Image (cartoon, rainbow, N blue to C red; front, side):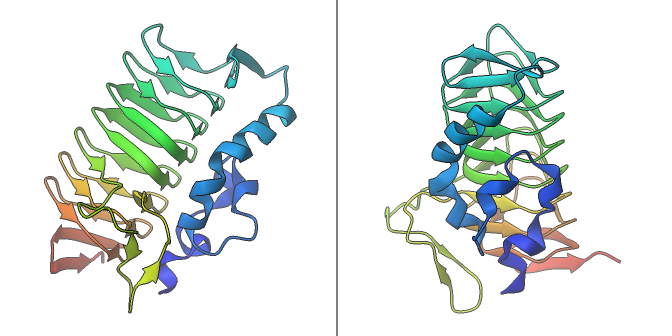
Length: 220
């Protein structure tokens, strides 16, 4: 059970969004608060470092945003981040320092910690990606169950989220291989690697190598 707690997944010193985690135990508790938190955080941004891209969208002056990127409010893009050609940010997104949001990547209701990379054809929805986590080309988060019922985190007897839309939670330094699908409510512990073309469900413990369902090795 411990591996799905905020304190065991994320170093909150590596995100401008640390305050949204106040009072929360599990990461899914933060998802409904992202939009309102962004609106409050915008009021506190240092206007010497940040500028308004358009109403509800603020970016650091050091961030790079391609002209072809589409960004819906509310959204904050932190210092040094790069939003590449044809990125599609649907709103409710906090993008950390030096993060990369790449070609044809779609974001919706997410927090990307500092130095996160989602650089090639990724979909990340209703998810939180920890410090220096990386999703390989074509890997996605699936955020709605096929039967449209509320998502349950598959840990122990199960942890009810009471939410219909929950993607994945990647701890710090997680590497997800190309073409992988992270099913609704997936939690991947710190310093873990997911093999390419994996379908991941439930909880992957920290310091693990996920090869396939039922075959997970511990890093030495």
